[in-house]
Length: 232
View 1 (cartoon, rainbow, N blue to C red):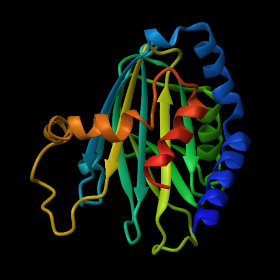
View 2 (cartoon, rainbow, N blue to C red):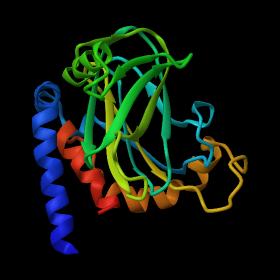
View 3 (cartoon, rainbow, N blue to C red):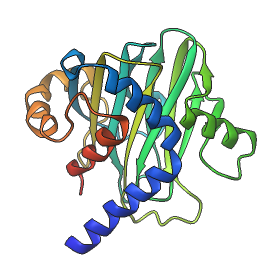
């Protein structure tokens, strides 16, 4: 079991190096020039809604140019078909998306109205090209609301857990926002409490469970890989 876990992590490292080298190199250069003491980190642990539509998306924060970096780590659990995350962009700019995790996870960036703007599926044509641009930090996003839709690639078993971590940044940053999105309790009503209420209730637990695993002042690569100690 331990060998499988080590093999899985090694695979993720290899995949990351192949997919977002250009994106994280820019962040590393920015990070080298900044003192780690200047980075403020905010963490929350929330439960995802049991609903499977974009209206029930988990809020991961506000993407502000040269100010914030948004990070989310979670699992697309067995027999869960989709995870949604929403965020708000405050001004037009070129965004960068970093991604690590198990193979077979499809990521789509969507507008507020549900239009697909970028797609990690290689068969999605122009949307795939835009996804590659997003990973390189070359996709311009307008001010507004956006959603990330995570599903399994075609042919992937629905019975297999898929661990993943995602990161969004626009330029440099001085504030790091970490979200650990946990599975909803079986049989629990999705309307029990809002994301904000859960963030307050889980704040102390989040500080204990997340702070030792996701430290501030890291490069994009280091931070995303560190988040996987929450799941492996």
